Each structure stands twice: as structure tokens, then as C-alpha cells.
Length: 210
Ligand code: C5P
Image 1 (cartoon, rainbow, N blue to C red):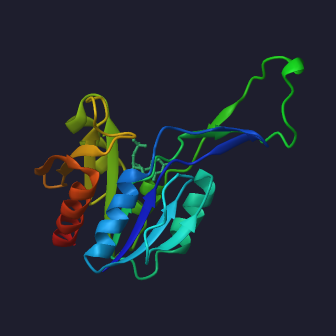
Image 2: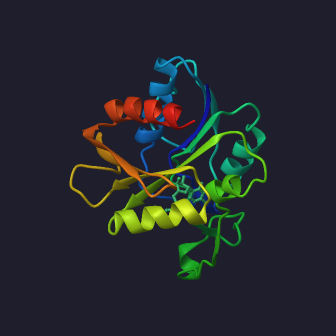
């Protein structure tokens, strides 16, 4: 099968030296890419800026902003069987980019933000798609309710949720626990394990759903 995976954060520039971003390390997405490769699948990995080595044999596409990630995803959909959108795409970006460094002496700037485009929702809204669409939900509360809302609103085939409020799980950590929410109201849990082991289970689960 051919996987398209997004991973890592995006960076939304304010001026040439400053940006808005988030704490995503990219570990989960990279682990999924590696697990898919290890299981003999093809992988296109579209990644925001992270401090991780590229998985060998993955077709890497490196991007910085949410807009670049959106364009890279849409340009690489041909022949995809499973799309896993794991990236922590910034929800907002500065309305304008200041081409020169904003000077401190000019006072505290007011930075207007505008929403970025939702890549996952844009794939869910495609009229024809031949791939299984998996989204992620990193939640601190109401895991099931929020994940199910995402599943419906973004028209995914599965939403994979993790509780980022639990100590030692989720963002920046090596361990995670995943719950798969499916449109038929059922759910399946992959219990706490290293992101590497979970990724292997996740790849199997997604192939079974495809
Ligand atoms: O709504 P929320 O950001 O929590 O949804 C998370 C899911 O949506 C993840 O799969 C993430 O990769 C995807 N997403 C996206 N583009 C955005 C925002 C989120 O693909 N602009």
C-alpha cells in the first residue's frame, strides 16, 4: 500500500526571525512512517520542521508553513491508499508577514491572526477519494466527544485520539495510548506503549480498515 503521512508542527512566520508554532516533535508521524516502511509499504512523508532523521526509503517532502503543507499534500495524492494526517498544523497564522524584523523600540506589535486551511477537512471534502483518511485528535479533555466531532466534521474514515493531558504521554514523549474512533460508533484501543510499538499496531489497524 502507499501511505501519505503528515508529521510535525508548522511554522507561521511573523517576520524574518520570528514565527508561531507548537510543541509537536513529529515523533508519532515519523514512527508511523517507519512502521509502514518496515511492513513493506511505500511512504510519502510530508514533514514540518523537526529534529528527527528522515526514515530511510521514505519519500520526504519538507515544508515549513501550513500553506506549504496543504499544497504538498494535494500535489501528492495520486495513487495513495492511506492518508494519515498526524501533523500539528498551526490553526492560525499572521495575517501579514513583516518583510523586515519588527523592532523592539517601535513598541509591542499587535499581530492579527487569520485561520490556516484545514488540510484534513479538505481531504474529507473531496468528492472522489480512493484512500482511507485517518485524522488525529490530541485532546486534554472529553476525548471521545471531541474525537467523534472531528470524525464527523472533517469527514474522516477514522480519528485516532490520544490524551495529551496524561503525564508521560503524547507531545514530546516516547509513549502514547491511542483510541480509534470509527463512523459506525465503535472504537478500538491500542493500550499504552512506545510510539514505535503503537505505530506498528496502527499501521496494521489502518490496513485492515482499508
Ligand atoms: O481540529 P484539530 O486541529 O484538533 O484536528 C486535528 C487533526 O486535523 C489532525 O489530524 C491534524 O493533522 C489535522 N489538521 C490538518 N490541518 C489543519 C489543522 C488540523 O490537517 N489546519
